[in-house]
Image (tube, rainbow, N blue to C red; front, side, top):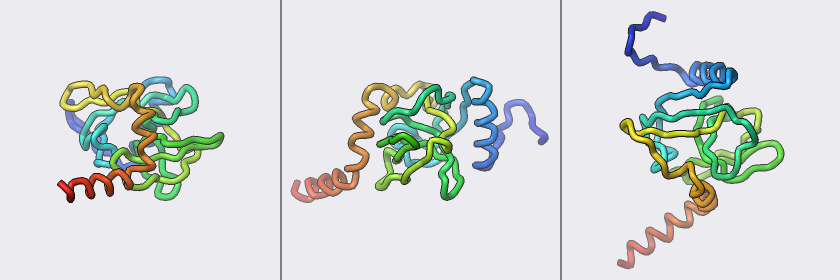
Length: 152
């Protein structure tokens, strides 16, 4: 690969996951620009996210980086439930969960988010559990909100 200082390198999903895994296996953290809007308003398209190695099992409310077992794409979504062998995850802006994700598919956990050079604080603290608690009911909240707006 021919690159110059300051040049942005775009990687495929598989290349990104491979590089991320290699860095995390050394115990270091990995930073990259997120793409997509499934985690808005917490993570916006082009925010810089920092992924750390998972030291223990992810908790409900944590945002994890994983490879989806069906389509092999890298995803950053919030844990909304967990069991002994894996997790149920869902994007904060997604209407439906991703399904069951085996623990072996998890690459790391999101520990920081930056937007335009500033740290995004909301979404990684204690409030993350509350966000996860409301995720399964997101569709219901959207319908209720739509009904309320009609009556105003």
